[in-house]
Amino acid sequence: MLIKHSIEVDQPIDKVWEFCQDVPQVAACLPGAELNEELGPDQYAGSVGINMGPVKMQFAGTADVTHRDDANKTIIIDASGADEKGRGQAALGLSVRLVPTAGGTRLEVEQDLQLSGAAAQYGRGMIGDVSQVLMKDFATNMQSRLDAFDKGISPTEMATAGSASGLAIGLQAALMALKRVARRFFLPYEPSRV
Image 1 (cartoon, helix red, strand yellow):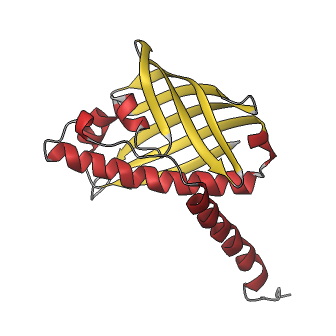
Image 2 (tube, rainbow, N blue to C red):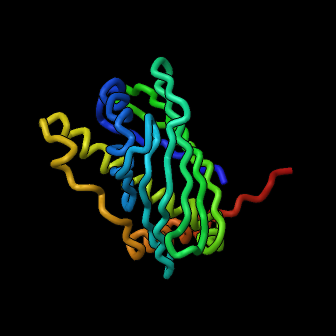
């Protein structure tokens, strides 16, 4: 499943690109994610935990930077992992391209997400809505970390983003789904003109 997002941060592109070179720091911006072991150059081990409805899943796995283009400010990461209780697997191809804007930097994010097991039972809409909520939180956390770096606060002094709250994410995703349904049913009817 291909999911696209656009994230805006109020920092110049070179500063955001420099921040993106520290992959564990970038991962720490995503609620529930942590890369805590360096396996080799641009290879990391870690975990991501998320609640989807009544199911709490904790994936352990690896992330590899497979492509980095300084000239075009693009980075590609392949990640995969398995739920620690054996209820499913996930694979993610992540592509991020930085684009300068008048007020800062836009991150154009493409996620190619493949799920199996319990996580795969959720529909594309629900997974897309949850992803949208997580990316909004990611953008907020990234902006906070970039601002902290400006103030001289080191990465070790910053707290991680914490785990993703299933209730909060579920409520926000449900509201997004309801809005989508409401738009379909309550948009004004316009008869076709012949």
